[in-house]
Amino acid sequence: MPTRVLLTVDTELTSRHYRRGASWHENFERSYDPAGVGIPYQLRVLAEHKLKACFFVDPMPALLYGIEPVRRMVEPILEAGQEVQLHLHPFWHGKAGGRSPVYELNDCGLAEQRELIEMARRLLMEVGAPAPVAFRAGGYAANADTLAALAALEIRYDSSHNGSHHPWPSALPLDPELIAPVLVQGVVEVPVTQIRKRGGGLRHLQICAVSAREMEAALRHAETRDHSLVTIVSHSFELATRDGLRPNKVIRRRFERLCGFLADRHAVMPTTSFASLPELKLDGGAEPLPASGLREAGRVVEQIWADGRYEHAGKTEPALASSSVIGAELLLQYIAQ
Image (cartoon, rainbow, N blue to C red; front, side):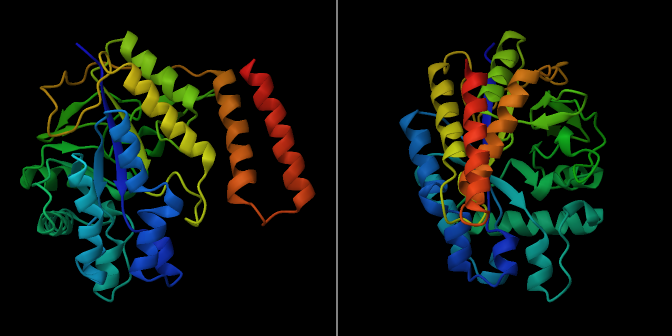
């Protein structure tokens, strides 16, 4: 049985751009399609490699801005033949109601969570998305009440369990090291895949959080140990700098390399969608990839280089930034040998 791969992309307008006073048009530009490496670019790369992905779309900004930005997010994804599922940041509900915003869904009780999820589902379907069968809480902020609400609304899958963010904000009553699908409270929980860190702890398989080598090692590990599923996370804005103004070429190359890697292995590691998942082997005893000091050091150096080159461009002392980048480049060359 092949190891299936869920490439998941949390797709949203961000509260950080709202808080600095951006219009929804500017927020859309910097969150959904920043610097030419947002969702339209990602859809093209996926199409070139004949890969499937799931886009968890947060429709709640419609409460503040109207339905048009949500329509503009969803339609290109559906037109590309990719999957749209449900994402939710409760921040927008509070702002639209003139109340202090709640940032974490699991700060709400069961009744309010169900109301918010039902509201978000209705908004998503209003712009033409099929009835969602999968959900991910914004910031992975789910708990047992979230699963109860999803079960009541007959949403089959949740993908909010992130062991590296446990016990908060990812607060589901599950082992942090759980990476295999499991049935909990009538919902199939599909955890975000983790790798182990040196000295203990976990790191989740997110494109901006792990290197290409770590992702490839985790995928090979899953394949050789017959894991039923690997779940990778990204965001609509993840391949750009945090201000949404420039591509982060290091993260962009990770995405492109990942797509090439998966395309080369499509026979044994096919990408899939939630709607087309077969009956999964539940609670299959999958283990995270063991830690590797070399891979971890390579990623740390790469992140330092990328931050210095892209995130802090023009914000740091030029000589210091230059020396940091040069030092990181030398270390990267050494590690690659």
